[in-house]
Image (cartoon, rainbow, N blue to C red; front, side):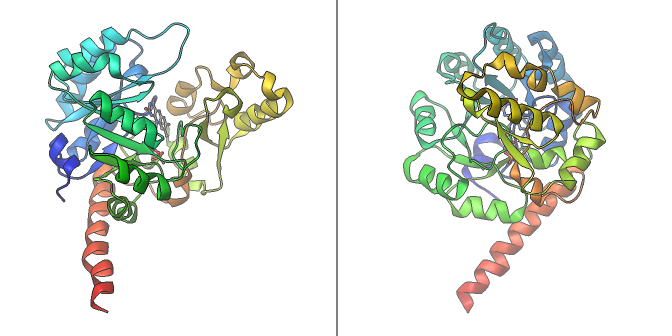
Length: 325
Ligand SMILES: Cc1cc2nc3c(=O)[nH]c(=O)nc-3n(C[C@H](O)[C@H](O)[C@H](O)COP(=O)(O)O)c2cc1C
């Protein structure tokens, strides 16, 4: 399949693996790139720029194909060493960066000078247009269904994607709720040039996370996510567990007076405990409604090949069949 996204990033299939905290290690990114998609290492998970440089090197030993790095710009009291991370990316010869969170404008000149393509993840049309205006090469349009941070507008992809298509000139991928060939064809129909998946890639053999996380996703249905931190305007879609129940109780009890400090036990430093140790109630972890469409743990290649075969068949048989009727 050839789309503006496969052309832009030099990949075989229009499928991207979004940055995922404590999931997006070299093993994950390399498996996706090797299977013909675009794998992405999650920069901040590495903890410092030196480790990111090593992780890029490690990934390059696993695949000769292009892979990217995610840089998430979060509001924080002591910001990470972003200039250092950017240096590691440039010096590591990375050609694609997925930015997310705050406006990446400040970092674009350095990235562009190094010949790096930037895809910014946005949860609204207005932020997508801003990304286009400041010179991003593409956008990942992340609907309300998505695992992680869906923003505060709550517009699902059936509306958000065609709205983005109406306004954007640069190519975009559909993100949030994407799982299979049906998702890909739907995304293309709504105006996207590919799709970005997070949660679905966690339930794969190569995802470097605890088996219990993968089985939790297989067991979960589309009804098993919750939105947390809405009162803090930092909404996150997570899989329901005991910690999330506790967190939501606090939100209810404290109301508008709630502060980040009140929920630290449920959200701070919990990712390694869950993803690495499989301590499933250690805290709140991102996951999308797409869990309802996840029923197995294939290899990344099996997953991507299946998606492409299903998309081909939907386009060539099901859709074309309607025209002949
Ligand atoms: C466990 C997990 C961690 C994530 N961490 C990040 C992150 O650190 N930075 C980021 O930009 N997006 C992050 N995301 C969002 C994904 O990159 C992607 O946009 C999202 O998962 C798409 O929705 P889906 O899960 O329905 O496929 C995370 C998602 C998950 C499931």
